[in-house]
Image (cartoon, rainbow, N blue to C red; front, side):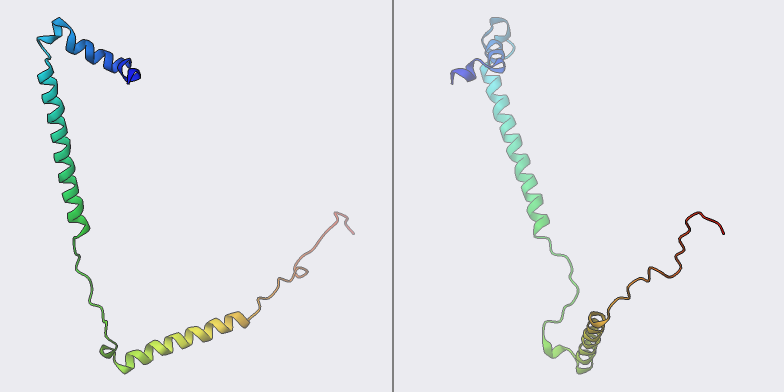
Length: 117
C-alpha cells in the first residue's frame, strides 16, 4: 500500500484535495460526486450496450422453408437425387482409375551446341 501512496498520480490528487487554495474550488464532496456519477454513467452505458447485444443475438431472421419430413419428397425427386449421386460416384471412380499421361520430354526439344554445320 505504501507503493501506491507514493505514485505521482496519488501525490497530485492528494495535493489537489488538501491544498488550502484548491480546497475552495474542489472539495472532497465534489470529487465523490464526480466518481459516483462517472460510475453510474458507465454502468448505464454497459447495460444499454448489453441490451443491444442481447437483442441482436436473439433476433430471428426469416428462414427459407425446409422440408424436414421424408414423406414430403416425391418419388421423382428422390430418384433424381439418387441418379445424381450415382453419376458422381462413377465420375469419381473413372478419375481414380485414369492415370495422367507423363509428359514427353524428347518431343519438340532441340539442343544445339552452338556448332554450325
